[in-house]
Length: 394
Image (tube, rainbow, N blue to C red):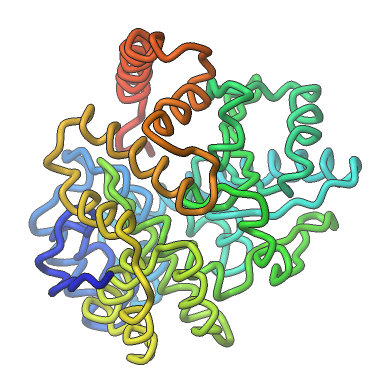
């Protein structure tokens, strides 16, 4: 099934706002283009008085680094320097946590791979202060998931996500928290869209060996890292995750080569061709990213099953949907992808069986009551997180 994407300017949903676009240009471009973008951003935004969205705030260390290289001075640069230094110090804490987790897993004979921000700041950014993270993501083999849980929980890490044992095969990761409220996302699948045995075997096979304080650490290959950055970003978020754009452009700049055939194959395998194509078109149009035209053509030829087309259409309009409707879509597309990848849900009760496993309940009649209770819990948790989230921290 084919779907025309149209111009990226017509595809609302997860793209940067005008102000965010200016910040990205100040962070990624060179010379007068970067300086002009920064000056224009300053003309419409007060760094001190205005409350920045989290995506913009997290981009500030990279903005500071790039503008410093362009010779920019002024009172706001000291403010940016403070944000950068704060990010650097916070990231040192996260790396300390990661080091402790790696030691626990390594001593138990469990391979570990760093994902997302931790991997990027270690292997692609010039220093660890340029890519702020809120937690660390650690990927372990599916067969060693339960052993990894037991080891981390024995060391004081507790599950923050309430996921029943019956639901663990359906999700890609859960959040663990230590007594200092440090967080680790423990993955046994990389992508929430592909949660089935063997889904990530090829990622392990292509992984690159790295180290952290003499401990072995794997990271994704450049092609897989680029694909992951794009897919992780090209999804609806109430706060646009504009860092994916900086991540993708940084990978393209630093990596010696990208295996574009592998990128296209990953998109086909995971039924993510539409999202990847949209992300790549944006990078080419907005930042002249060095992506071969043949890659976009190959993505357009990838088979796109109905569930992928419907999911992509829903993602584009989710900013206008009610939260309950978005949650319904989440379950619907999660179920559809699991069935597409071979999950044994069949017949008219398939979706009900899926929801029973997801929520860890025994009887179908419990679903409505559990759903209402779950919604109340989620809304209360999000309200608390929003109330406690710092804005424009120093």
